[in-house]
Image 1: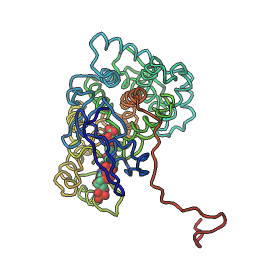
Image 2: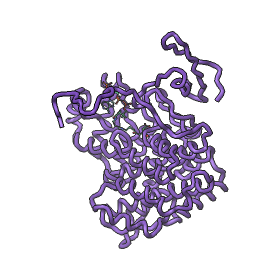
Image 3: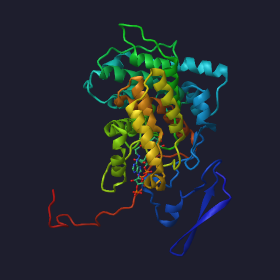
Image 4: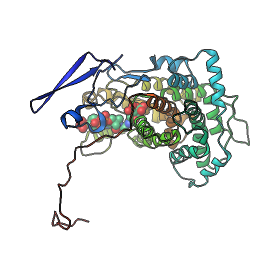
Length: 434
Ligand code: SDX
């Protein structure tokens, strides 16, 4: 990368010139790759609050202005005009496909919606009450044992085939996890339907009666998939990149991403946010929970609030709030107590000094759970739906990482604060606290 400026760092009267690289949008970076070799010092940044792990062209976020763009296109425009499959194509290939390219791509994806018949047996190994995310982690990883003709990460054709399989099968496997957890038979994909219609059909149709797909609900599903498709170097995407940097096969990398997304501080927050809103139960209880959220000694946090990058409103939350009202209206839910609590909680929190000072706004997970619950999904399925959508972003970043000429295996260092050399047999402390 070309650079014009340098940052000067002086350590023990020695000055180090660190190249500064300019971003096409947003924050420039200081290249510290040679700092350890030249100075014997590591940089220290737990949680990577000030660290760029890579160069990427896929997604741009401006946390202060509340901007989110996939390959330069604003998320608001994509949510309004595009569909999820076109967005997966945009994320992976870098530009919007023309009509011909899109219809060819659509066929390529639908060729992979079914899974190997033997894979269905994996589900029987899970207890009926297993969390569907446990099935997602296990079965997505198991794909590598069925599709051995798309494991060679150095073969671009195999990489592309693996990506299409991941995107196509993520929704089929997610739907099977749901059907297995409620004891209903799996529903095969129907390639005449759109991706979102197919997912709804695989989840909610039963052999005993006809399932009518609502256009409003299918559109809301598609918007949810689009909004969750990618988000720069978040925890699960960074996990996929780190796993991929060791040369692990694509299905193993995606399974690692699913595992990381499951955490309540990340993708698991949509389930936790809905459960929190249900625990609050009524508007009159909100102040008690706001107090708990502000209490340093209380581990309670307002789930669905706050973000590492957005220090302004998460643009996805704005779109989901509108989608939420549309879906509830369509279903005929006039006054949903959970939505009422959510809207009131948002109003109160956004006027509260603690939240304003700490720049805590509703994030993508605050409203998504209310919509998914209204559509008929149990809270355990919310993060599965997030994982289905994010499989697109994970694969796009996985491709970009492999094609990056400067990429090498990720191997961070540490600040060691443990014991110095001790002779065997010497006890360091009298208390044996085992
Ligand atoms: C996602 O990274 C991504 O892009 C993620 C994501 C994606 O699309 O991939 O956007 C998806 O994961 C959204 C975030 C979902 N998580 C939640 O809603 C869980 C609740 N939120 C928090 O746990 C928290 O806000 C994080 C994890 C989202 C961000 O944490 P940070 O950036 O590490 O900030 P922090 O924990 O250091 O908090 C800063 C301060 C702290 O107070 P002080 O120690 O400075 O006094 O704000 C407080 C925190 O205590 N705080 C909250 C809070 N979030 C932060 N206080 C109450 N409620 C909250 N939700």
